[in-house]
Length: 401
Image 1: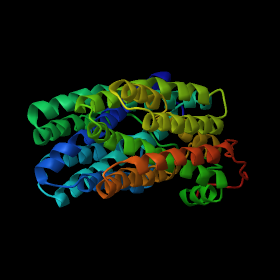
Image 2: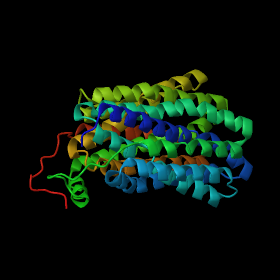
Image 3: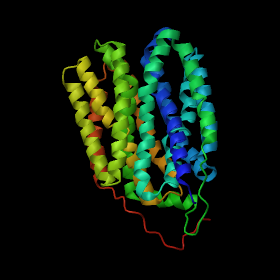
């Protein structure tokens, strides 16, 4: 499919704006845990379970929204899922019970995220960009999600302090609705079938037979566990240890700001060095950063340094992981295969955010979850070291059915 440079640039800009909005709004949910739980008399597990379900629904539906984007184009998927995201935020703002919280923050926003974030948009970018520039382009779009976190979080806190949690969520729903026209303008087109293309079933069978694919999935499970636990529970962890809530907000904003640089750098490095080995080092360093944060004395300064360090490593996994999928399996079914890998990320997210709330209610602290996050970093580093990113050699007789 011939793609002009202007078309690619527009695709990257619009895709970046959608991801920045979706991820920016999502990363502010942790700020609502304390006020909503206090108003309704919930333990932290109720709010944590709703966000855990959100991540699970996001992951479970991601392969399907990815497959739809591969077949019909990303634009239609973004429009529908952007509308669901906005509706979920409005219903979350009107929630009055644990059930309504679960349906809105959990199910609707989870469905909305599955079509407005990485797998769908990076799949569109991967199909449009030349292979030698693919890692860099994915890094740019992934970095936009981090910029959204940096830019939107302070505004979310401002809305929360000014309007209260309910009206703030309604205002955020209006912001999410902007993804609908942005998605409609995104002129992504699915790839035409060509000789040698695999059918959807054949692509699934091929990936299932590759050990490296499953190792990549398990590694992404670790990423999800760590980042969503931190995103949701870090403000409460800092507050429990005597730091002001504004410190937690600033730390998350620093994560978003420095992840812009970290994700862009990861995309650039992925075009010059082994992506699996880069991921091994990334996870190993991430484990060291978490250990230093947990075991050294806590202060506002140490919290800010943690935000900067973990930010450089935050979503740097995304362009490298999706780049490996594209390198090994090609781009014909990239959104769908990337969606399966992302499913494991979200299974990890579910465990991280839910286990954080459950073990906190059980023990009164987060110590055990931090320790699990450190051990998982070592496991992920070992898994990625043995993954190959060499393209699969397919018989030329394999034709899409």
